[in-house]
Image (cartoon, rainbow, N blue to C red; front, side, top):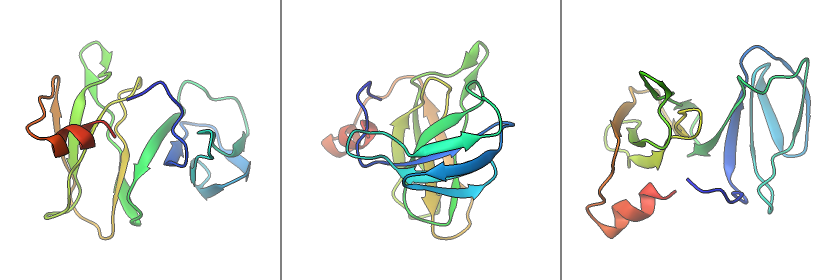
Length: 140
């Protein structure tokens, strides 16, 4: 997780109750409450126009992969969102797991696959990389 903008990064926006009226820029509206796109060179998304303001329930997460099937997990603790918890998601058996840290809302990245399958989630409060490859993928 970083405080710096993520340039040229695929993303997914999921809304709670507001509805998307239209979108400008590189935004693909998938439903009235879900849109995807790629951030520009400065890390900005395209513009969404909603039927009402919705800041609390809006979730913007990195999208990993290009498959038609995907999932995002919301990690919670007894005190609320599990912030900066390490996680690993494996979509289909044999696929390369994605490793990351939950965001300020407890969300994981939106991880996709080319076929429907049961995703596996592992969560840990502290992550000790076993190799340089683990360390690099955990920073994504």
